[in-house]
Length: 223
Image 1 (tube, rainbow, N blue to C red):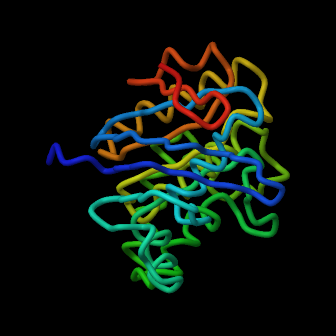
Image 2: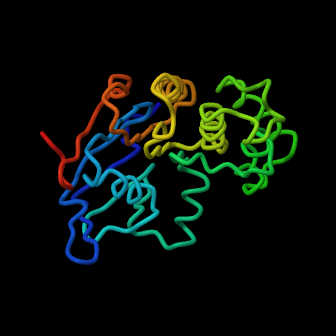
Image 3: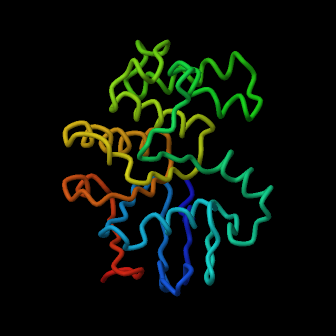
């Protein structure tokens, strides 16, 4: 596997209306197979940083490169392709489609990418097995616990074999034991899928599972 960084962030600055500086000159790199945790108090700029890395927002200054692509220079159509094919997202609110089964939710990105049915079904089967939900493939979100729903969301984020997984407070709605299980799962999947993960969390008990921790304080990197 190449040692070239999957994420290269240089001099990111983001200012919101009213002159609030969410990020002030943030720079860092993340490498293949690395689980990087972003810590910081509420309002420190964690979500802003993840949104800029994922191409969901644009900085006022600085550059973001993901898997060799200069995110900050891509047109909107190119960003859509990047988010579909290169980046997987996991959110605090799970974001599952209520009327679809676990297997159908995981398969949504594959349908959007027009993956053939047989290949799609096999990928879904493998992913649900990886997250320990092979026996729950036919269940809908309301029939599953919060931890199970987040496992489905993690499986879905990996459907298209992304180079980068971005998770914003993925354990925020879970109890402490389930949260630890989800973070342990992410660490295992980073290794088995060869993906780089950027995970925002403010939970100190979860930070020990990361390969590296970067801390944001008032929009800048601490230390």
